[in-house]
Length: 376
Image (tube, rainbow, N blue to C red; front, side, top):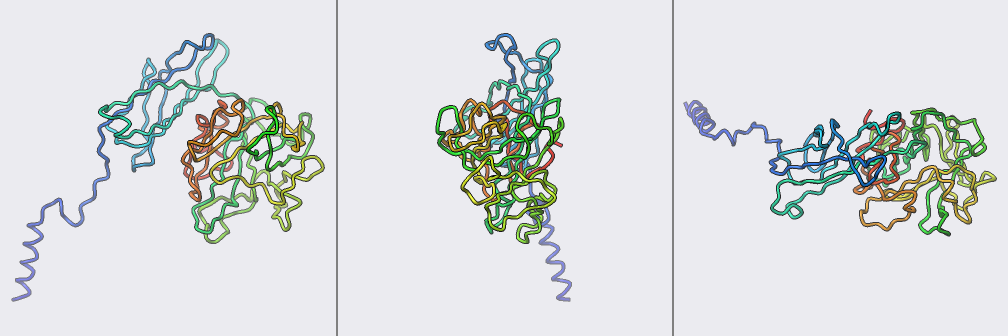
């Protein structure tokens, strides 16, 4: 009899509980928001840079890592305007791409990218944020396309899985013969030169060599150490397999240096380029300067001539850093917000897209993509 009374008593308690307190109710996943973002995208006139034209019918993506909100997409109207409504205060990344007709015979790739940090303090009493983004035009060629340096998620301070990716955005084959890849120093010796920390060179003869082709649309992966880094126990499944990289940095002066016999080497101390360092090519985890040069100037003791630079990129997690790469090569830096040991990578917004402004050209992606693009 006591057992029956107990069951009845428990049943009455459950029936009296309000539905909002029910044990198995799903927690709300949406974020309340009452702000709007209105953006206008324009391109400068090909004939008169003081005139601008709206970019209509273009897809614009907006996303934030502050909340579990999926990527949002909108389409610009004829005035180049797109709006996003009912958003919370957050830091938003804006990305837009278009192929436009700049003349009767010529098309051009243009991109608009920006980071918006929208807070109650920055907006004040306003609930609508408006801005005009002038889209930048890309230059075509062989580019430094991805920079993975910050290390995978780990607590053993492992960062030897670094790699760099090149991409040929031209419509014809280019050749790596004799080119040099540099980690830049912080203080140029002369105004028209780059100082060098590390310098490595592809085999072959600069400019005229035809032994190491890169076809149009091809990615080329340059590995610090060309092996499967997932074989390192504490980072297994968190990093990259570089055993099939296209090239590997190798320093003949490093005692016991790893060398994958199946991957060709970029080398130093090879009779042309030379450096005192006895370590492989390593760069700062969350900031540094890089350059790819044609190799006609390879004597770094007096600096590498700027006129030989094919592409140069500067990146830094610090938004207030002092500029190191000359403005003529890169107007700003990408990677603001990169985190050490996060597995994040820095990649161009589109393969090979280059406006010589890394703040516009590069976006942070959550995981590296050696040999392909994050949009694929």
